[in-house]
Length: 178
Image (cartoon, rainbow, N blue to C red; front, side, top):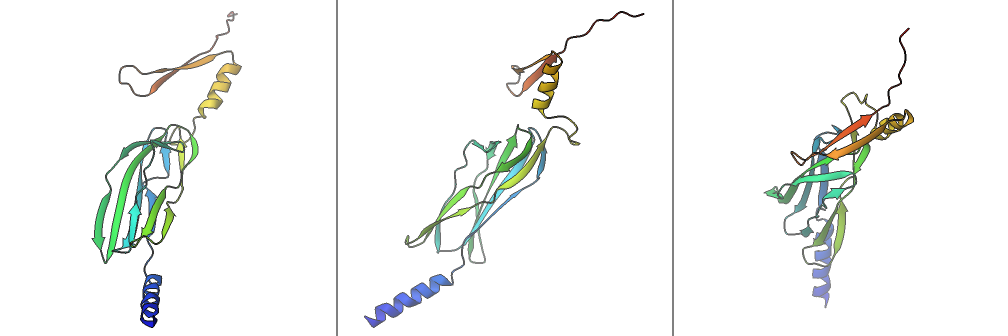
C-alpha cells in the first residue's frame, strides 16, 4: 500500500513539472484593403508524449472574414517538443475595424485523465477602401446619393463570376445660360 502511494505521488509530481502546451497566432498584416488577403497563422507546441491535440476546424467564415484557403497542418519535432502550424488565407469585404475571433484547440493529457481548451488570440484588422482611407464607407456614399435624388445599385459580375459592379445615377438640374 505504501509503495502504491509513493508511485502515485511521484507520478503527480512529475506531471506538475511538465511543460504546458502553448498556442500562438499571427497575421502578416494588420491593415488591408477590402478584398485583400491576409495570412493567418496558428502555431501550437507541446512536449512529446504528454498531450493529445484536437485541431480546430475553422468554418468558411469567421466574424466578418471569409476563408479563402486552408493550408495543410504542418508538424515538426525539435528539442523534445511536437510543433504544429497551419496557415489560413482570409479576406474581408466589410470596412472598419474587424476582428478575427478566437478559435478553440482541445487538449487532453496523454493518459486521457484531463481535458482542457486553449484559445487562439483574437486579432484586430483594419479594413479600408483605399490606402489613404480617403474614400467614405459605402453606407455614407449611399446616403449622399439618395439625399440628392439619386439611386445606387449593384450587379454580380457574370463574365468572371467574381465580385460585383456598383452603379449610380444622379439627376441633373437644367439651367439656362445667360
